[in-house]
Length: 87
Ligand SMILES: [Zn+2]
Image (cartoon, rainbow, N blue to C red; front, side):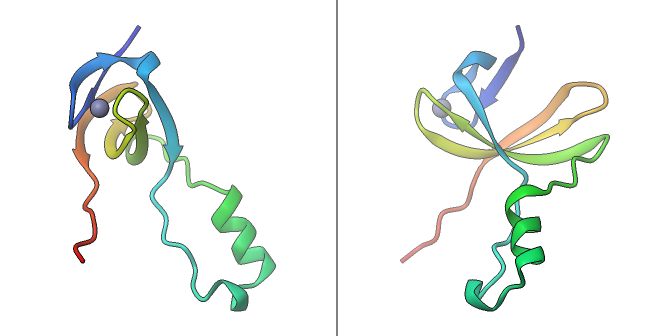
């Protein structure tokens, strides 16, 4: 069992979290992106060894946030709320 920290709720059991993916920028405009670039955006990840930033969802509060982890050591280095657009 591992304890992960939600920036909104604090430390919780890992079973309350779902991995969303690596932070990516959607290629735009989508109708002009090549099939290869679109497939890369959808399906391929860098999956780096060492420190990396990932997007996670806390299922208890349904908030997504960024978590920094060291994938080689399996340690969590921090988590922070995703910035929301202001309108
Ligand atoms: Zn939460």
